[in-house]
Image 1 (spheres, rainbow, N blue to C red):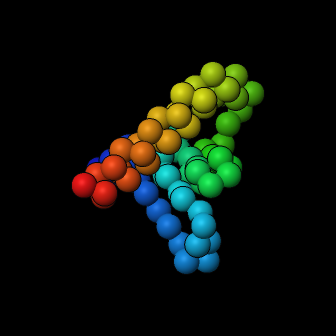
Image 2 (image 1 turned 135 degrees about the vertical axis):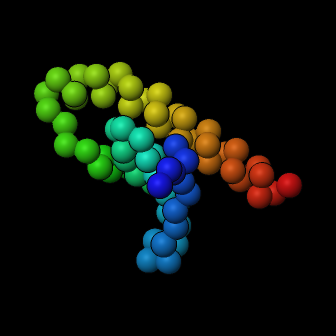
Length: 75
């Protein structure tokens, strides 16, 4: 099964949270309410160096995805 790069997720146990799931490597879930990120991958020291430079871009991309989706719902 093929998934889109980003998915919106919610849960009634976290009514104020806004989750965006990044489904491609490196997979993660970000809560846009507090910008907390949970990585779904195991990284070694070499990966962490590369991830540090890429993480900011991925998180910004996730935020832009959310903004785009909200605009589409409002239309």
